[in-house]
Length: 396
Image 1 (cartoon, rainbow, N blue to C red):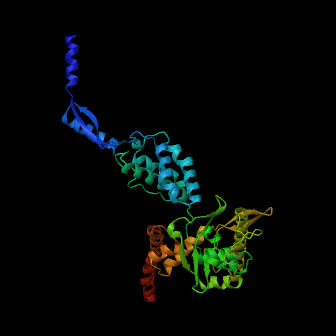
Image 2 (image 1 turned 180 degrees about the vertical axis):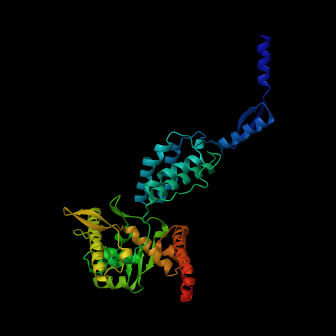
Image 3 (image 1 turned 180 degrees about the horizontal axis):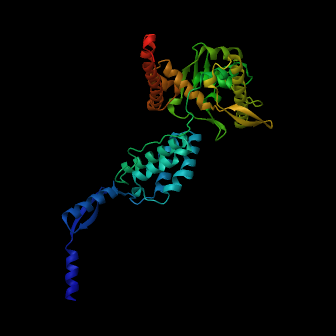
């Protein structure tokens, strides 16, 4: 009995301290107690308690990744993006992220795990990777600022390169074929609007005649056609609402056919409203078949002048017949427009405004990529410069 009493006394000799973790609605301090065998242990317990309580509210230090990511999306992200982007976020969360870290505690996930996960998802394409990184960095950064985790494992998280990525400008022959189709095809105005404005396809489909200012030679971007909700939606970001210059070539195409202010420029075939998704898909297929056909005609006319720049094609079924079609998508035109801005010497800030990029860094990334490509071309010119100037007798 005496031995048990001595053991009990040893336990009771632990250091104890009270910590004020906040105040209640009456202003009275909320006190919690901690203990430790040594002064260092006691101080560590105090720090842990203060991290656990902020403003009198207990934080969920053991919060699960799934629960917190869902909460983060609903609270911090959902209201800041368009309906189509909301659908993309939900899809990426459900299909990719939750399945990987579903029942893990936030603080148990390491930076190495997240980078490995990003690397594995590189095969999904640049768009999916962009959403994945936005979710991971947003959720972990917010959790860190709230004191839920002791470090942000997404610091230094890198987006892996995507093989086969199709973000490039149009080739010379693609450009010629596209412009020929834009000028001659009954539905070619869609290509002209994409080529001369660099807008997102939803922004082009959302253009009304009232957005065109023929006097000022400008186009106002006001709305987006959202095929996810099949409705007229908000633009992607606040900077997407913008006024852009109108090229003379586009003005010459629009001026003779101008319509009423509230009428869509690219209309549905029967309704006169915006172009339905199925109609858009069929129209795009017809246009890309026409671009492929135009390319063949150009090759015959030029007698192989563009032999090294022939356009990429694939086979598609149209009216039950396999036909060659260009591989171009609407986003090629947007990247091509950014390339033209760079080559024209447009300042990166102005380019970001015209393109409607939310961050100048997005435009700068494109400009940097193009600069490196031009640098490589110029390096080759320098290498050839001296051999061209050698006297004939000195050349090998």
